[in-house]
Structures are given as structure tokens and as C-alpha cells.
Length: 266
Image 1: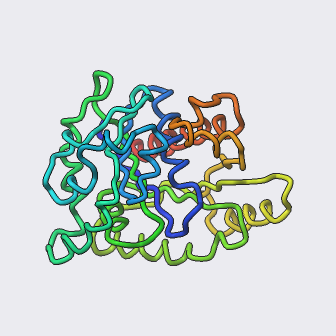
Image 2: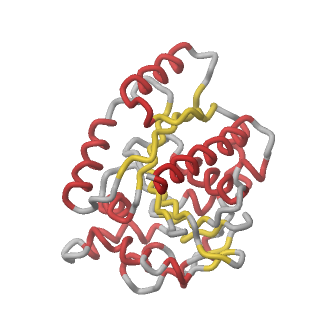
Image 3: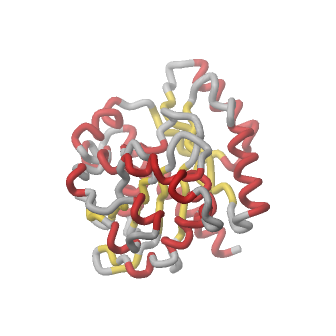
């Protein structure tokens, strides 16, 4: 099976991109997939949430995207079996001025991931790469979209959920038209859903009406255990497998795999 690259993108902050990257990766690994997370957010929250200490980040996505190091040199093992990460550091804040004059500046990540076959996890090749983006439509996110087979869009169940979605969809369409014709939207996952809140249900209904089948059936609930887990350097699935958030991400992983299988069968 070829490695599939899924980029998690939304220019709004606080919508659950990193939580989804960490826990979806863990859930995919739980059903036998081998997953590499590429953290291209200078905040490095995916790296921290998987327990990767700053001193363990010898090489990061900065060295990867400047071409100083190969992908295999930047990969760090995590405490999750069959999940590894290319960690991020704040050096990434200096990437855009460093490469902005280069003709291939939008394709640095795509070129780096061409060597994903050199990465071996638990005795086998990587089946999924999950790219965790910063909350903006900058050069880092453009790199992630140019490298991706598909985009997974986390959206919070709150009043402004649809605000900015048209901008993101426009950017995805522009990238597909001009830079990456294979790009498509894998799905939209609604996060931080509170069933006691009438507004959250209305937002969910509105997004489903607007986006149709692109919205996953699985909805990620607002869950204390999901919020606590990163402070322990663990995905929620290792912190508390039985909590509602962990169970939701296991269901989401099944949906992602089914959509990928339908795509390959088409």
C-alpha cells in the first residue's frame, strides 16, 4: 500500500487540529496502521502532546524544510507503538524568510516526503502521514497542502464555525488548480461538541447542510480527558481509553480508513 498523506488544516485556532492529529494517529495505529506525524506548527504542540521533550528535538521540521536533513534523520519515536513524529521547534518561525525567494518554496514538504519509504516503524513502512498545520494560511500550510493527498478539516461546534470556511475551501481549490491537482477533502470532523448545548446541535446541523457527505458521522465530544491528556505527554487513547473522546477517535479512524478504501476501489 502506498503511503497516504493527510493534512489537518484550518486557519482558525483552537478547533482541535493537534488533538485530532495525535489521537487519530494513535487510533489508526491501534488498528494496525503505521503513522508518521509531521508537526509544522512552530508552537510544537503535537510534539509536546506526544511527550517529546525540547532537548530530544535534535532535528526538526525546520531542518527538513530547509533541506539540511533528510526525513529519516528527523524522525523521533514516540511512546505510542507504530507512531513516530517529525517534531517542531520555534525555528520554523524563520522558515518563510529563509526560503521565500526560492522557486520551490511551496514544495519543500512534498520533496521531503518523497523519501518516506526510508522510514520504518515497528518493522514496516509508513501507511499514513498526518501533517499538523499552524492556525493560518501561510507558507507552512501551503507546503502541507501541496504535499497532501487529502485534507482533513477539524471544525469546532461553535457559532463562528462556518466563518472562514469559505476562505479555507477557496485556498484548497486554488492549490488544487495551480499546484496540487490530486488534492481533495477527505472530510470535515466536528469537534468539542456539547450535546447539552442547543447552539452546538444547530451548528452541527448547519455544517452538515452546507458540506453534506463531507462531514464525518463521528462527532468529537467536549471531553475533560481529551483536554488533560497533553499535559501528561500522552494521547487520550493512552491516558484513558474508555473516555468518550478516545472512543470517538477510534470511530473516526474507522471512517477515515473506509473513505480511503472507497477511494482506492474507485
